[in-house]
Image (spheres, rainbow, N blue to C red):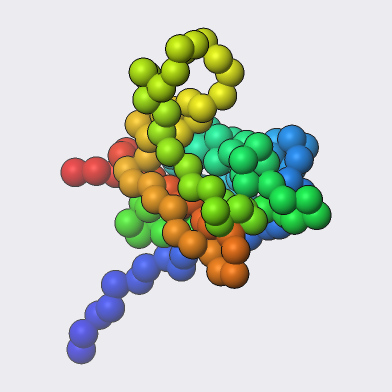
Length: 148
């Protein structure tokens, strides 16, 4: 008789939010609440909180179209310790880029550095089209507390 290993199911959460500052703040708060309810380790939850805050802010500031919401999706696989954060907005014509330090004459100008904050917190991030006209920014984070 062969015993199969039990694996915990993948936890998922999806929410449409208004493309406003309030919607971005709510995305961060809902994410933390959901991750804590799933028992996600504190380090991973803390990093995810910053990632969600930046990606949601980008969706509101750069991906907003009047009357359109943005979508937040969280997927957590406890067996691998992998968390995926997805933020989908309506602007498929404008893809995010990490601002370089030499990007302009005024390095103290506000904005343009959100993805530079996200990049060191995630193990991988990318952007994919979301038909018919939007895009999804995806970030994957791994739980470093269970690494061997």
